[in-house]
Image (cartoon, rainbow, N blue to C red; front, side, top):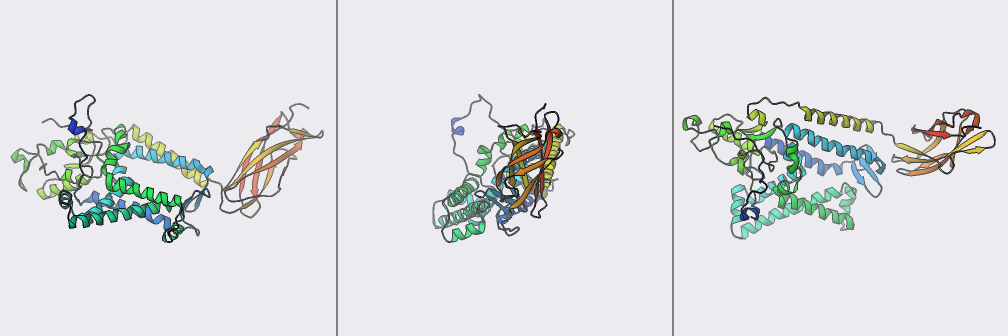
Length: 472
């Protein structure tokens, strides 16, 4: 018997499609509850990620909120680090790291992000839990939705909506708590004194959470998320995916427990359809890889349970590669994985190194363009510079500027000692002077050293060009 190929289900351009299929209303998916190794991992991921999201704003660090993006003050606190708008470079590196990580893990192990860590998946899982608490298991929920509106249905639906709305509102409140100190935000909420923008974003993010995780659910993954559309560009036959083994499972058919499938000319699949019932997007994994699959592995857990009951080996549905299913050697280390891995490591190392070498003070040196140099008497030449001094610390600091690189070089700034407030970019004029006999060839490189004089032991050095007349 020929083996069906794993495929991504797509409609062929130009193929006829029944009108009722094109315009049919979306049918609600009722995922069946499942237990198993992968479901336990997903539950652990939900508690870990949501725990971090809801608890981090309440953690204090150096008498302030550990993670706070203070937009009005243009300060971004992340534990012991403080970033300013001038540090946008680090955000760009983080975004590049996130993109490369997605490419790397997708090429290596498929849609792990979607199944275990995507916010849509995580929040939808919690909303499904609340639905199960209030409306019951899968069969009860289907019966409740199909039945008439009565007292029980109203009470259960109302209880679910109250839980959903409350949880969504708390999610929006926590989100705003990353931008406004959450304790201050809490007091304002208790006293009904929220600002208009704070109230707007709490409501907006709450509605977005309710709509995506409670109402749209799998439709976000199937119709709105672009990742589902371009994932195939990162997949190959060596990518780890969730796959049904057709050679072992076909032909399908029911039979009594303990019956050897070979004696009844059947495969191991008993066609119970539990793999379809537990799927949060409602697909049948036996039809091959489909773009709607989010790799949550619920079908693996439920199928392994069925195999245990039938006394068959596990793994009819499993994490595997297309090459492994087709009995071809799988290559984990292949060019795309190696390239992604090297780029990911290099940028991550650069990011960590940049953070480790990050200085709390910065200085830009701009040469005066109106006068490249100025002769002072017959023996001296002077250059004028504009120094842009940035204090990235949370405390004010006092600095002096020193010059070196030429004999008898002198520098004057106004004022002589420079006080820069936290986060301030201060412009200071500096006049650098030396004797004409000490400059040859029309100029020389000099160093301007910004040195703290308040005991903080901070220095920053910039190299610039000192200009002079080429011939006297």
